Image (cartoon, rainbow, N blue to C red; front, top):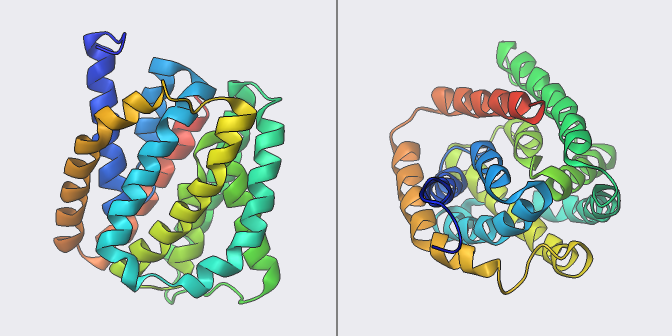
Length: 246
């Protein structure tokens, strides 16, 4: 089917389930899906195949949690995010997979250290509310999302520091990634050529499995405490860092 072997088809289905689960549940858990799609289609091509899947997952999360998101925080990040995406598109077209994965691995490890340090504090540490922080988070998120789909752990650092409740965190993250992923589409279509009518057949096939994964993620969110939710975010961030160095 689609020219894929049975094993590759199963990996595509599992990737779609993970995307839905991550978008409506444990944020940042898409890294295993990134790895599997890269094994099937290769690094850059897989990023184009995965992007429409991510957008579909974002829409599910917005439908469920969008009203509880903080659009004010997101809009402040968007100008810097656009610059990060443009930089990622230009640099990503010149780097091979091993080079930009190593770069993203360093960024994610830094984020993981920040998450752990924050968790060890007796009191929550607030990020300063200034333009430098917003521009830094926006640029790094846009860049890392464009070249390696690795912005989840980076944005987690920002949104966790805002001390939002679970639903507010998911809603804010969903809106941010939806807008950012839409901004990436023209670069994949016209610059990298990684989104075509041919690649969209994989997204169409994946749609019902993204929905099933989202239902699983919503169930997890309803049945997990704030404490363990934050710990799971840190765990998926650690997995992301290890995977990016492989």
